[in-house]
Length: 137
Length: 114
Image (cartoon, rainbow over all chains, first blue to last red; front, side):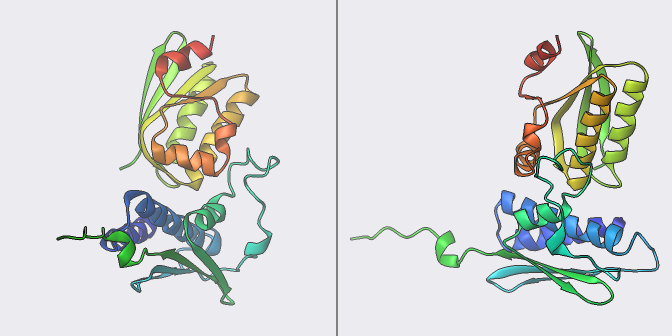
């Protein structure tokens, strides 16, 4: 689990360096945290012989996080909705939902073996973050 | 920062003051054990003060729900107090806000158990 903490911290640093506000930084760090935990716990069944691969990139337009495990894979399109009334009081099953809710794009790719998650947070264009100078003269 | 749990009694209600993170491998097990112990000792009114909880992940959310359900199944009542914005937003997002009784001030929370 130490690796999850390291991954989350690295994601938070990247988000901070990209100039995201506090809420967005939290969303990124949490989504990456959930993805890393999923990879370790569910993807690799907490098998210490297996590892997860993580990459992070600021493209200027997006923050892109890729997390891959070496497990059996799963079908992301057939997960129960944790917000449905019949699932609301379940003790688990919210990880993928949170990832999808907190990031702008989430993509799954089956690696056979393993699953790769790509999480993307859009960065605001520079023109939206800088205030306009008032016209003078 | 791991989870710190302090316990106190107010008008027959056990208040657990939580501080830190409730996540898999960190606070979620501590929280589960603390609540289980309380209920095992016959405590039936439990208030979780989350005012100093700055981070909760899906496992932590699951532990809160499980604690609520476990308490209810054993005729105990568990309520939440002083959610930070982050925790509040997550409970809203996951619709868990509809499951719990949540209070902003302790006096109102304690009174609600009567």
